[in-house]
Image 1 (cartoon, rainbow, N blue to C red):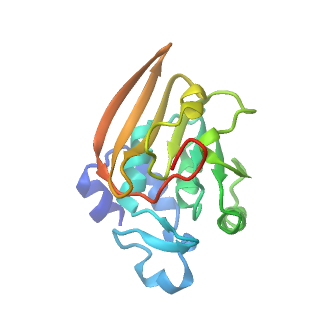
Image 2: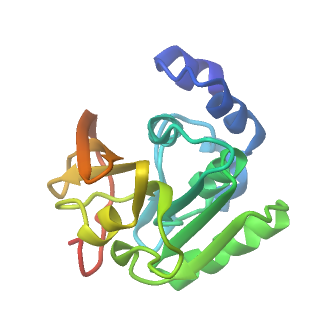
Amino acid sequence: MVRTQLSSRGIKDPRVLRAFRRVPRHRFVSEGFLEQAYDDSPLPIGFGQTISQPYTVARMTELLAMGPDDELLEIGTGSGYQTAILAELAKKVYSVERVPGLLERARAILKEMGYTNIELREGDGTKGWKDHGLFEGIIVTAGAPDVPKPLVEQLADRGRMVIPVGEHYTQTMIRIIREGNDFRRESHGLFRFVELIGEHGW
């Protein structure tokens, strides 16, 4: 998977590629889809949600440009696969999920796998995690109609946010880099995600 789906499509960061070799994707897919666990496609995980295709997870992770001392906020725990990848690369990952069933399943899997640098919370991810402070990285794993203002406010100086923004069925992958009081915005191609539901989403 790493060779044929990631490296061959331009994912170059050696730390990101190493994380994908370490995290077994089959642990995070539903039992009926185990044979497709390493296919280059999203898969249903219940509750109307999906685990993103490996390339999408890798692309978003590489755009975050994380350091080992960074603390990150993930909006949309989902299956927990992206959470585990982030935990391989960052000091700590804070992740918010609005669907209780998904959250508890991800919590159990991540605990079984031995991760100790992940904190999970149920709630409206579009509001972020205000009582933490500022984050060096924020990643949103669902498509938003616009960038939620509370998330922008929780981005540290020189921090990066990666979020798909657009219509219901197609979004542009946006990276926002904070430079003091300025927020530089970049576009990184078209993707398709489930909708970001919440007060500052759909």
